[in-house]
Length: 393
Image (cartoon, rainbow, N blue to C red; front, side, top):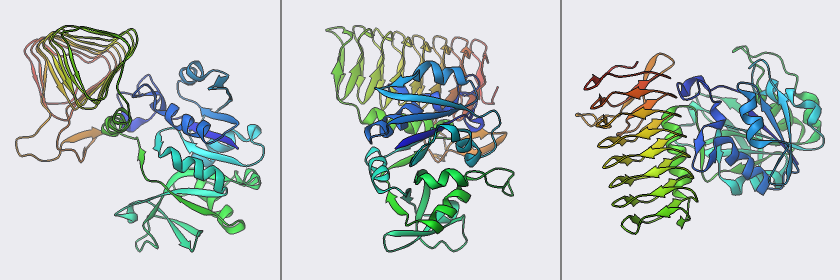
């Protein structure tokens, strides 16, 4: 089984985090988002990974190289983002025999990917409370009989989770006409496979489509929550690490630090002295948490810094972000309502009662800055010392 993994898009809804990093390469625990999907494919027995790349393609190539965990890796370049069928068709020359198609910005239950490969032809599905918002599978017995997009009267509660195992014949059906949205849709290929073959539904226990910043936070909550305690770095005898905390070799935890797991402190990161880290927090390679700072349920990307006497909660900080001393992030509304965030120019609900700030790469705050809930700081944005910021910048 070859696994075609789609990782060509930028991810416009997750900006500013994707301004210079493709969304599938954003950090989720100890590896990029797409690496979790590829690991699931390798564990399921894929004998080759075909990565469809496009935006910032070299970032993907540099990470995975020609071989990943002993499995050959090939690359297909999608120069135009024209739909999922178009993306898979870009990889056509690499496809021989049955093949799987997986989204590089989705997290899948790994056991289900193993079943997907075994049951080929098969489609992964997830049971949802409101199927009218999804592509929905209709079934008869143990077979899929159809797929329909956002039906008014859904035939089942099984939403299409965008993971497929196709027979070799499907390679011939990848060239499909444009849809009304102007894209070449993989669901047209799926419909043809359903007509020609007995296709099995594989129900996922857990699945996450990572499209917006708070979903990246949720992805980290999932994967950091799966970690088991491991202390390999330099941890002071006067630090207190509780629960499932991972301190990688090369990380430093100074005196007086309290870390309540789950948490991951990566190689080259420094915490403390006297800092407090809690919740499902990622402190990525080279990141720093200063004296008496508190970081709760957040992602600090590579080389980000939260200086002394600061508080960061339920937030995502991009690479090289520097929060000046005394920066405080508010993550809760006075009316206790769900926090809203700007996605492609519109304020939308995150569905989260607590959500702080999303800061693009290189953003900087002046000392004693106060940041409102649901705030977006674009790549390279700055604040003044003592400033209260309640509008995106």
